[in-house]
Image (cartoon, rainbow over all chains, first blue to last red; front, side, top):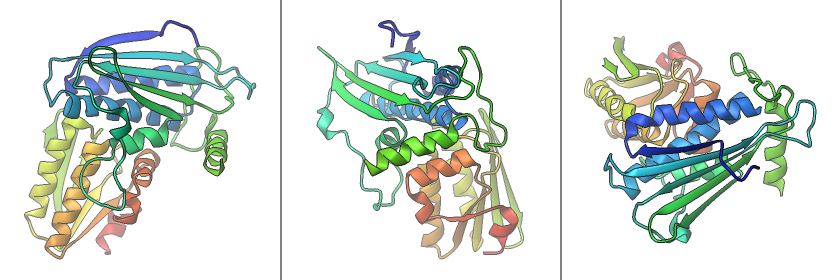
Length: 181
Length: 114
């Protein structure tokens, strides 16, 4: 991926901005050739990550800074060796915590809340928390799609009625392989 | 009941309350959704059906609201069903294994048969 992100956004820790952030990353992922389901899940991961910063990092203060950087590479049509890829970094100035302690809770303990980290780690291929030098935290997330059928640069992968389309089937295959591994 | 980008309808259908959110259920919509579910639960019908057929997106605050509604419903001996899940919403519920704790039905009519 290029050294510079295609988007570097500074936003306030205001939940009203979440839907716009979801739309933005979903649009970038779609343009890169990710499947409709992947686009939705990438947007979900960003949303959950930002929610965690609002709620836990900034204790619901709505005027603190968050930086979202996005790198993406479009897949090449007909070339399974060149899948779409996206990397998202979320940085803040919130209180620092030990990255090792950021874990999902036990899913068998059915109660409201505490599922954001689990979702992020499930839908993204990689999700790594780190302390920023000086202050704040940084979350780096990465996801690779499957070999695209329609991922021409600027092409849109539109799926009607959520039927398997574009690279959905191949994406499932990739996940299955990962689970076996 | 409009709540930002979310509209929520609450109807009584026979012995059931049917709550129908229309739109995305994100961080800011979770609160009005919670209030709607609490309001429906307060009617103390034996069945509560949440029609999610017009929801394409839900995140963990929304899921937390559903779990809370389930707990409230169960605590008074009533049932709760989730109806009409879109593939995207279903995938999120499956990811969190909440499909193992909720009664999930294809549509409201099926939910009313519980």
